[in-house]
Image 1 (tube, rainbow, N blue to C red):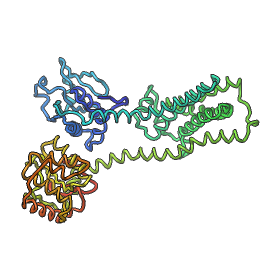
Image 2 (cartoon, rainbow, N blue to C red):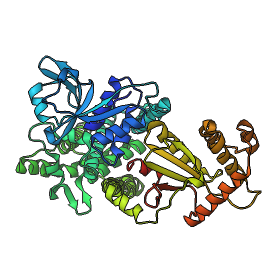
Image 3 (spheres, helix red, strand yellow):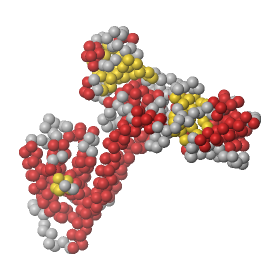
Length: 528
């Protein structure tokens, strides 16, 4: 199991710790994605549902913490305490008068029994490992997570190595190489400033800005003083400056004189920035870093030119044009990138709001119950999978040659392996044409469901998972005698589909009510 290098949300960290304690193979990438995407996050239900999806037997129950025998608690377990607005703890064991626990702040924490019992709500989430526990395709999920996490470091490393190779092919003065390093440092700092401007809640930037007692980046970067105009910030100007400088240095090392004049013009801004921070008695460590880099550049230029830089009157129009284009290039690129980044950041809170609205239980049941309820009579003889006595009945109207039906069948089969409180009915939408292959396969599948129930699940899985969909080979592996009763059932299911106004496959019904937009099959698991 892998732990992400960034700060992990409390619920995610505690679940990772529990699975690691139980030696269950689930990648931290998957845990993070599934927990955060759960409509009831953060809650015990979200953690329990995630454990169930990875075939980890678990149970949540409430006890009277003041009356139970604490030594008999099923360690380790997840508990919720009301400190810091509510948080989860992985309670490992009891040592003397202390409970031993871990969370995202400490891996080996201890809390007195009295304090723990006062803040604990008495709910225990206990889990244990069995032979089926773990993430399906764990190795592939692990590799996908590594690749996704390594994209940005790989890009940065590639750019840096390319830069090093370009520089190493030529002989440059020390001041030039030093200027390259300072400029790249400036790009890095300005990148963090831009990240803050787009997402002020970024954990890494928040941690940097919280260094020191009087550091408060928000007080500086959210003020009017941080902007040149309503549409241009000083962070963006800094990025244009350092990126343009880097391009100039790489394309034409002799442009050092141009850059030195631009740096000289920028120095009054450093006085303005530091003066404003002194005025409001707050400091932004990133802003101060930019000022330090600008002055470091100035010192390097002053030393390398033995004083002020040369005048620009002797330079050609071509050189000046190249210099200007180098600085316009990052402006043009940012003009296209900024709206995309801003919109993507706006989408996240909108998704969270939509998720809370969409997965409102009352809203869901109110929507589907407003439709006509279709009774699944026994005479339809649907293929029944799962628990025949379950109260939650999912009916799938399927087509043997329908690609989405195959995916839906796989999803339902996964649920049936994880849960015992679901019954699945399969009804086939067929035509009256005898030559139609859909009717031929459906007829055979219905017969298997009636007379050879013990192999029905395997036969359906084999059919839907097969790419070639060869009825002759499939029927040879699962032979069955057909009788006139099958034709009667086919006709009943056909007429039922007409009455239910089934116009596409797969059509999903929950307890007789059709699931319509915006809900899909994957959403049902949160309501049953």
